Amino acid sequence: MNELAVTPPYTNIELNSEEIQKLSEMVRSFTVFFVILVVVCCAALLAVVIALIRISISKQRQKESDEYASHIINAQEEERSRLSAELHDTVAQDLRVAVSLAKDESQKELLRACITEIRSICYELIPPDLAHERLSAAVQSLCQNFRDKNQLDVSLAILDDCESVLDSARFLDSQKLGIYRIVQESLSNIKKHAQASEVSVIIRREQKNEMSGLYISIEDDGKGFSKNSLVGGGGGGAFGQNRRHGHFGLQGMKMRASHLGGKLTVNSEKDVGTEVKLFVPLEQI
Ligand SMILES: Nc1ncnc2c1ncn2[C@@H]1O[C@H](COP(=O)(O)OP(=O)(O)OP(=O)(O)O)[C@@H](O)[C@H]1O
Ligand SMILES: [Mg+2]
Image (cartoon, rainbow, N blue to C red; front, side, top):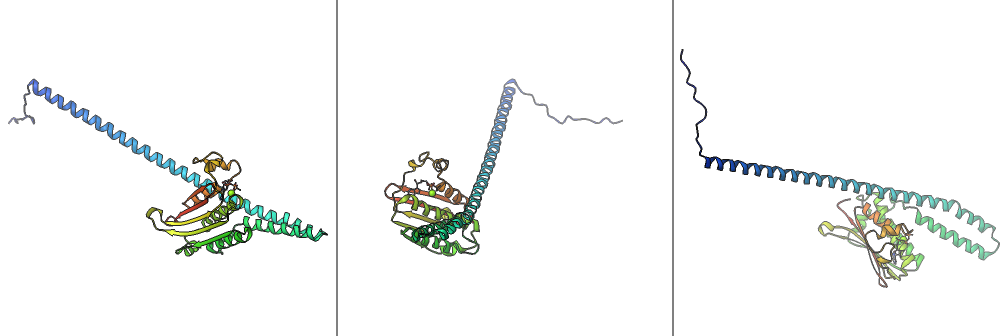
């Protein structure tokens, strides 16, 4: 029988001690390098995971706060409609009976004036039917009524193609109502607090990259106010803290603006006037 000659698959390398030391140093530095690489990769992965968790938490918070805002806005609208119906069916009816019972003509006049006032409050409380009425027309009659009722110089300018934008289907009815209520609350604040003589409402459009959209400004030349006069001072939570003291208007406007995906800013200077500015991005709607 022939014996097979088996050659080892390796070559015999002889290393001296200096070379062995060099080799072991190389292995050590490679090991250190890989350990560092693994640690850096793990740290980067951890950072990415933490960032993703943070983004998802902030998205969740934003979603919750949007839902909360929309809940508050709907509840407010329902309450307004309920109040309007209640006022109409109780106080207004009672006043009508009182008119028929009153003997004195001056008493009747006074009672009729009360009925007119209550009717106007009911009208302000119920939302306009924006499914059938154009938003631009609703804002026009809001300004017209405000002008007639308060004998104030109110100008309204709807510039560019804003009339068709306001009336277009790009706004949901609830969003149209949001815009309407912001203008209404701004005018109501002017009546209640400003002692103004001139009011100007301007609706215009701007194309400024990320700030392109609709701008609605409601400006008065009244006594103005400093943000420090709001309960809680001028900090970011001032409007919120003010709400807890029975002033909900500005906070409600801010909520409605963020519900529109927009932003509300209030600039006011004592003895100069106040400007409420609503920005609504058009591409988001
Ligand atoms: N146009 C304005 N001119 C002067 N002061 C203003 C004007 N708008 C708001 N203010 C001041 O800001 C405060 C807060 O306004 P906000 O609308 O939040 O509450 P309110 O009008 O007092 O009450 P609510 O709107 O809840 O009935 C007002 O009390 C007032 O002092
Ligand atoms: Mg108010």
